[in-house]
Length: 221
Image (cartoon, rainbow, N blue to C red; front, side, top):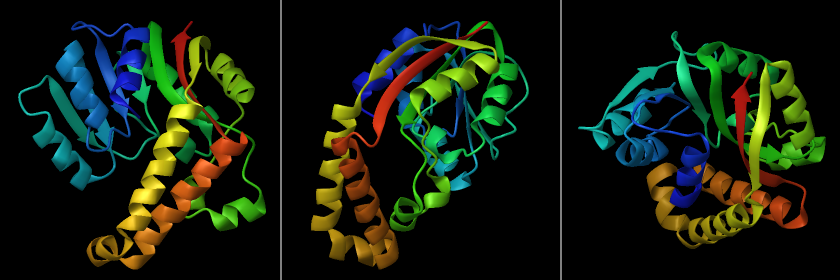
């Protein structure tokens, strides 16, 4: 995601210094650092990787940020004004269970801010071609809206950002390919080849319209 997209989601989710924000699958807290720096909210980041959380804690030193190591679901107890899930909804096969969990953590009127990979489920051939396909579960946008409604949400805003993500995926694929030999020495041949293949496939799918990328805000009823 670009910084402008993160800021746009934060504004649409009505973040402020009084906001209690839960960032699920926060990784190294790149978006979390930006949001805590510019919006000053009470931030709790959750991720299953201790290595990522170590970087996140260093990155956000001096900011109102806390972190918990956990595999989601379940999410930490408590109630929040906003729950954020960026670039990770794709990894959850059972999205209904995830959305129910998120609804339980939000106060009435709370907002769920996320990114959505909009498209039909992968075919057998696509799943064979995509590295780590057990974490690749796109969903049609109308089906996502239906799941949100059943979980007690209404979609209040969505924006198609496919063009921006197509440009980024293509640029990353080219950069990874150009530095393949050097990168293989650092992270291994299998990992760099998976990154190249994965980004090329995402770029191809977004270019053809097979996958569309959206920013989305939903409000708990």
